[in-house]
Length: 487
Image (cartoon, rainbow, N blue to C red; front, side, top):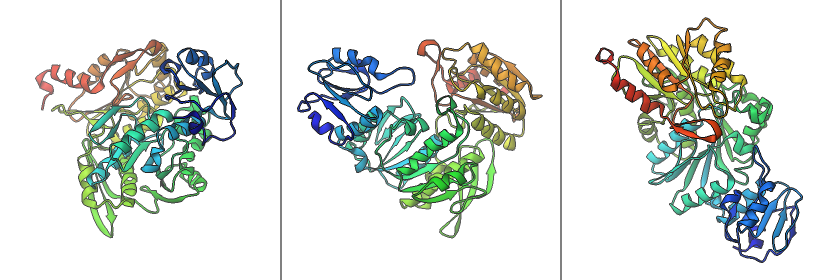
């Protein structure tokens, strides 16, 4: 592709050098640069992309896009832009033939519930005969293809490439999780969402956003790009968000919803059941994911899919068969107690799952959790207090310690749990912590293993990832347990 064509949708640019040259491809990682590539120097969390311009040129880059003043070298075309991330998004869309314009894209944002809601939407749409792809935290899927997901919302270059593959595979719709980082960092810049969904907002990612106000404003950006908004009317931030949204909108919820609600909710350790009116008919819906919050996610998904003509048989069938890896996932063990693996890693998500479990558990609720290193240190004590207050017993352990001392992270959590009268034990080794929880479990107890969900690794020092799968560990430990624990 000619460089001048690649640049034609950019505005406010200063160009130095030849634009009548063929570009091989676009890259924002200097290590991936090959001959005649264009390097876009975006700023990361820890480093500035301009520091890698020389590496990119040495690897064969013939053009550089940067938002900073830099020293120019002969034979290289330089494009100075106001925002390198926006430039990357615009150029990527052009390079891949603007695939988003060929798709009906549904975006789901919120602190909790994004993954489950996107799975629900995908499965209902598939049951309705729609060709739909999914982009999210666990994986990216389209047709018979399943790809590993690196982050919740891909960088704009990777996102446009993925959307192009989905178009080529014949997809008509895409449902994607849209993180606050993606919105704040313009990863989804220029994409038109036919529907945007807001699930909720609670304290998370403040190491990046700094304040809840900034966090809310980042989420609100989705609806500046949406034709229609579906909002959780029960969320504390809903009134403010609804005033910020200018497109057409509808609400769902159990208390303050105007458009979509549910009644007769029944929750037990293995499923949730509720009723709702559809076309003046009272329908019963059963989902094998326990918890009141499952009802919220389902209402959001039903609201979205109803816009595209989904019928009740498709909705009930898809939700009845739904299984989301690591999201309030009940592990089949044939034991007298229940083990649930969940991704809850924020104060609000931990409180939600523990509160829900307390309502349906006949025995004790045992919580196993830790907190990640190099992230929101303030939430550690908060999560300790929540587990100490709600769980009957807590086992504090490691999560992804990264570059921090695991013992220090546990101490931070302990400062919160010590404010309660909650019983607890600290076991740094996560496998041993899970084993201890299963050993002390009695009949009708529910063990919540929180924090990692679908993840199959623990991230330790220097970005190293060690294989670790909560579900796999639970199943192996269950096999080793004496017969007296078997039903």
